[in-house]
Image (tube, rainbow, N blue to C red; front, side):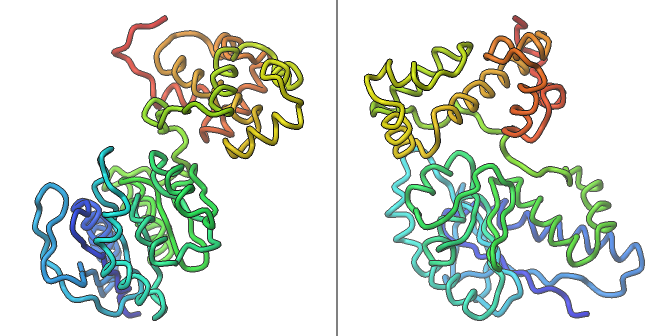
Amino acid sequence: MSPLRVSVLAYPGCFASEVFGVPDLLAMATHVAAAQGTAQPSYETSVVSPRRRVIASGGSAIDVSAVRPADVLIVPGFEAPPTLDLDATLANLKPETAAIRSQAASGTAVVSICVGAFLVAEAGLLHGREATTSWLFADRFARRYADVRVRAEQLVVTDRGVTTTAAFTAMYDFALHLIREHDGPHIARSTARIALVDDARSTQAPYVDQGLLPAPGSGFSAGVKRWLEQNLQARYDLPALAQAFGVSTRTMLRRFGDEAGRTPLAYLQAARVRRARHLLETTDRSVAVIAADVGYRDPGTFSGIFARHTGRRPREYRAMFRRHDDHRG
């Protein structure tokens, strides 16, 4: 069987670690496979660019080859500080979006890492598809590309030959999936263990830090959000909520849904889970007490909702994210 040809698209400002992360894990998988009797390399990797010279984030110069035919093209993410002018950044990367579009047209499977999804979307490859990206930029991505069905909680999303991943280490989740498909689950599992990479993750939800997301703003939905957050422990009462804002229940659902993209109840559940996550990380309170603290009389109901939002039960989440150096309340 011929090696799988994997190209990584390097470009100005891209994260150098995301250029080399997948090829490095594929190299490890090749060594694992060889140790178990595979006679030839499983992968042929290259770093390509439509430019002759690429300076990645941090000023790292990257040696590149011309864009060539490949089975898989990986598009890494780029440095995105709060002051980033996204329009200007994407406008300066038109040679890259053209290369992505051309490779996809020739039958190459395209994969983005983190905010590399913006480049893939600019190339027109995500129209009508499901996609993910870093949770930190998911809302911005969804606003910019309204025709993309954003699955912000997912680590890896593949839709009709185009794959998108969450931030940074999600490149390893994709690489392990590729190894699993190409070399089998045993090679993938062995590679993950050697590299100390978690091969059982399915969601980025547990890693979301609400404090790093943009503030709610000053619109109608922002006021409703603040009211819900100030009344986390209270029983959800849609008529009372609507009355507090001087509107009908129907108007409340319509206006909040138009601005926030979900129902007030869905937002309240997410806010309760955010508070519960903080309490699980920083206190010794029992799950039952925390459930009551955030408005759930039944710990079982709370546990189910928590797992739906984070992918883990409360005790599992605490074991994974507990901050041992914080003051307990």
